[in-house]
Length: 135
Image 1 (cartoon, rainbow, N blue to C red):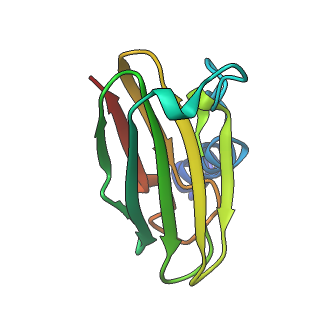
Image 2 (tube, one colour; image 1 turned 180 degrees about the vertical axis):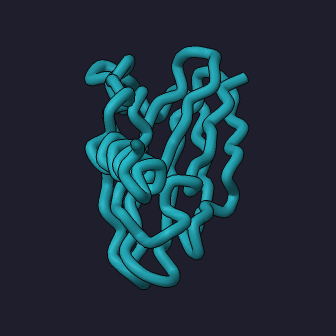
């Protein structure tokens, strides 16, 4: 005979496992240096993007940049402490409430690179994601 609430206990265990994976940043292995040491910044295009982090989303959550561009993000946390993890570039920053962090990377290869909030910020944390699209 099954134990009462066995399914509910299993659901809670799975939820905590998924939360642990998200908080530990598993699956975000670095593919590129954020800024290659030999990059001549003044010789490549530069794009500056202002972002906000609040209520379980980034604005904007889709960033379109041209291949070969040096990108500067100014990310402001509006409603609490958030994080910004762009794993492919080895970036993981904590952004305290009402502060702005500057994040820089060189978009040297075409592709789509996911980013996420890396600081647990509440019930909607797991959905706080976005994407850099290098065209």
